Length: 347
Image 1 (cartoon, rainbow, N blue to C red):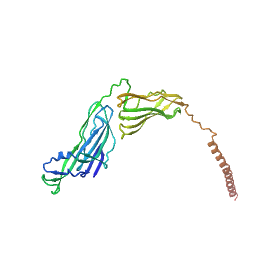
Image 2 (cartoon, rainbow, N blue to C red):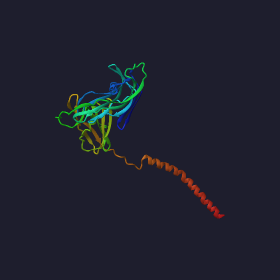
Image 3 (cartoon, rainbow, N blue to C red):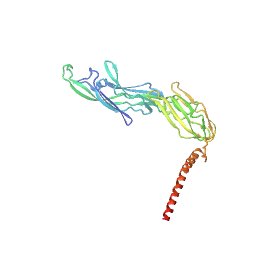
Image 4 (tube, rainbow, N blue to C red):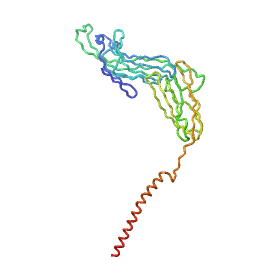
């Protein structure tokens, strides 16, 4: 048995070879419709946790391949999620499978894909089928032959396994009577923090906003902030940690703004808030921070270099000691040279 899942230009490619798991249906007799026969033993099932949801509400879809024949094949058509934002959840596992019995047939059940979907607009949105091109091998016997005694020959047929399309009713969000900008669908909270409570003027500080919760992170944008006068605010750095294996997506997003205050004083950032729609209660909620206050002190003064600083004294001292040694030596050398020239002139 060989399975290979490979990402290619945003789609999954599935190649597989599967030997027969049950022996009571791998025989084909003359006159049988092998396409109908094969469809009973090789099929793709897609299940969703709900067929109706609000715009931005999480829907999960799970795709499984049921196999009970000797086949080989590849993914021919990836599932389409037009009208949805999506997050892949559990990756395909090419080695493990579950055993499931349906009627008198035992199947190997392979996980193809799990995905979270978030409707982008109201209306009926359709999950298009996933398709796998397969070749199925049967042992061919004549119509009235005894299987245990007749000579068997292999016959291979082409078969397209496909899931059924699924329709999802995406409902519009209720009217937001209280006003305010809607930034998310799900369950979220928001907090603000400053990196230092006391900082000198002209030095950089960091104001952070952390959004935490679960839901449609595609819709979350940076909350609007009313900055105190006297601050220079720079482009933020965004740090995100999301767990797409949880449904809805669970995690945090931190928006870090570098800020600089030019003048000393006490600065207060007022409460920051935004609206979220909670599908579990079908109601809007306001998420907000507490005001934060910090102090900016006088700018740090740069100490001017003094003439009598220690380093200068050290250099002068070393130079003086060297001069005390070198000057007498140089004087003696000069005297020797002069006397030598005088003696030469007398000679």
